Amino acid sequence: MIAIAASALSMLLAVSALPLAAARPPKPSPPPKILNVVRQKVKRTAVRSYEALEASIVKAYGRAQVGLYWTCLQSKSDATDILYLNAADSLEA
Image (cartoon, rainbow, N blue to C red; front, side, top):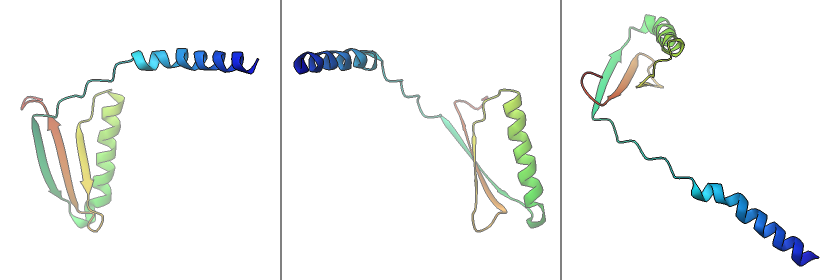
């Protein structure tokens, strides 16, 4: 009885693993051809309003269902120092 249960369990595990083995891994996308680096220095008194404006832009992109392809890095020690990385496949993009 134990041998039959063990055999049934091993068959069940083998069958349940089939879809995983048959699935192809996703193709990696190529890196962007262009990387635009923009450094922004914000006035010390305008940091909070700049952050609010940036957040509203991101929300607008989300509502319009437009892909957002930039990375914003803000200095931990100086909130006025901001670096944007914009990736694109062409100058037109």
